[in-house]
Amino acid sequence: MALPSAHLAESTGFGALDWSVLSVYLGIIVASGVWFSRKKQQSTDDYFRGSGKLPAWAVAVSIVATSLSAATFLGVPESSYTGDLTYIITNLGMIIASVIIAFVFIPAFYRYKVSSIYEYLEHRFSPGASKAASGAFLLGRLLASGARLYLIAIPLTMILFGAERELSLSTIAVSIAVITAVGILYTLIGGITSVVWTDVVQYAVLVGAGATAVVLILSRLDAPAAEVMQALQTGNSGESKLRVVDLNTDLSKDFTVLTAIFGFTILGLGSYGTDQDLAQRMLTCKDAKAGARSVIGGILLGIPTVLLFLVVGLALWLFYNRPELFVDGASPVPEDDARKVFLVYIMSEMPSGVTGLMVAGLFAAGLSSVNSAMNAMSAAFVTDFYRSALPNKSPEHYVRVGRLGVIVFGVLLGLFALLCVVWQQADREHQQSSELLNFALGVMGFAYAGLVAVFLTALLTKRGSTRSVILSILTGFVLIYLLQPTTWANETRERFAFLDTLLDLHFTWKLCIASGICFAIASAPRGKRDAD
Figure 1 (tube, one colour):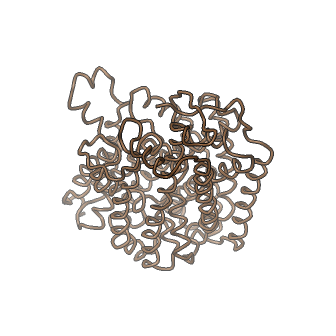
Figure 2 (cartoon, rainbow, N blue to C red; figure 1 turned 90 degrees about the vertical axis):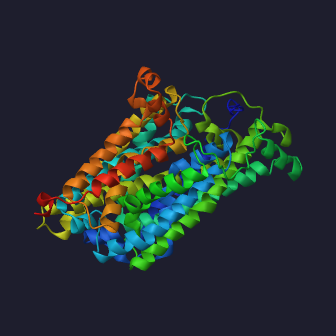
Figure 3 (tube, rainbow, N blue to C red; figure 1 turned 30 degrees about the vertical axis):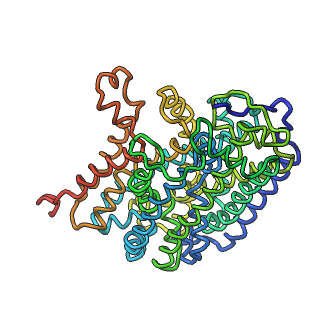
């Protein structure tokens, strides 16, 4: 497909007015963080749970702001630009997952008044089970949020080095360092309370940027609506770009109905029910009912938000592939990197000032997810490891350790983001899907395979033990690793046809397979040794 790189030479780039707009955005975020964290955090309950006083609607907005991330801003337009609207159907699985979490997971968490959701496993099994699950979260969140940090570094690299410059390890490393530093400083301001309330602000910026992009692109149309719709319905090779439902039974396809109902339900359970990053927000409400409303509301709010950015991708496809429909439409130059499509338009076609707003929207999406990950990882570490090892320290001491944890985990996220540059390049060389959405979501499977199995065992059965929990979590990491195409040499794949078929499955089916095996392990009957 012809991808845009036109007008780069004539691009106004990122000018003084754009930097001013971005500076105002960053100033508002910092000011709002300081304002909402005026109350001194005297305990970990204040710092990590907001004392359970945050309103459900604000938590719902924070949930959707965090879950979307830079993958939404960049990856969703990329998905509809290169494909169609079928990504929206994945919300079927997320809705199913949110209902299960609202009525099964959240009441159990509130019943035991946990600060870290892995404390529940301590009540259900033992401290060893809790630490194993928390450790899995820390490693899994490091992988997933490191990938998100990598995604937000892409546009900053284009701003600093030019949109025509190749995205290399050396150029992206500079951007990762800058974003990591900003994220650490912002997260230290006031714990989860400031994170949630500034997420509300950042969500408004994100949606405003997406809506502005749609209006600006479509305002340049110079063709009747019927002709525009006809262009979208015929697409590139006669395949409609307006398709929403894909009934294909090929399990290697990205966003089919089967994938949505099964694969994304498991992914949703992992993301919202077993991941401290998002589940932590639901613990900031006054009770379980409010927490349940927040997760369901967050999922539902995410649907029109994702649709908005899918429309951005369609508008970009029209602009670059059907220039005759536009006033002074661009003539695309062939290029192989669809990751840049929205960014190239922002940098080369948008007026000064609006470019700054678009980049602010991107940073709003990226920083909200990265910052919350730092806070959640620190919360899990302090609650599940540090406080149990040193139980007699003052509340203020644990808050100081929590702040130090934010710094340490922020640095670790930056280091893994560097690894992601090499990782995604390897996927591209193995001819696997290199779309940002699949890459960012697929990384999460390492921890989720075991965690989903363990929590379902704990909540739905009376079986399992500390040993089965630990074995299940370890098995999850191993299985997902073995299901990565980069794990196997091409010669091995060619020798064993079944292996090639297995590795070609969409990542959500790999997650389903791994989670099923892990559940069988986690729910094994307790032996005499376990009972003792």
